[in-house]
Amino acid sequence: MSNGLSKDERKQLQDIKPFVKQRVSISLTLSGILLLGYVLYAYLLTGDGALGGQKVWGEMTLVIIASVAMVVLGVLTAGIYTWWCRNRLDPNMNRIREGKPHE
Image (cartoon, rainbow, N blue to C red; front, side, top):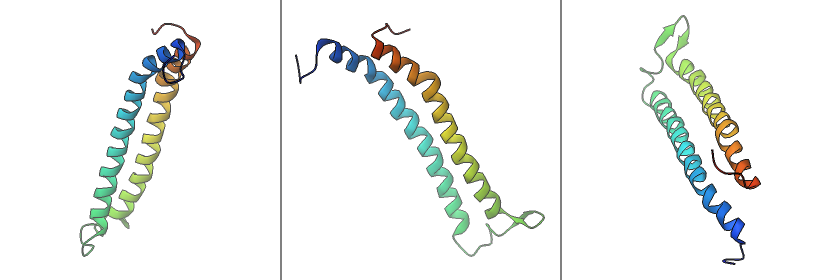
């Protein structure tokens, strides 16, 4: 045994590593998209208000529309991550835990 792990546990750990890398990659990508959105939103809020205060549709200003867009973007990124975990990550992790070969 190495590090207190059995042979099967070491095999599982090796099989899980690619999925952990994928999870980190997807998490960082989605977080980067959110961060970019927040940076753009902050840009609208700064300054003298000339850009963010522009009326786009009726009484709706660019800042109000950007606020709603950020909420929608947050929900979308959370939904994409949840979908990916349920449909891609979890089935593979369960297969590895059960000792079945990777498909």
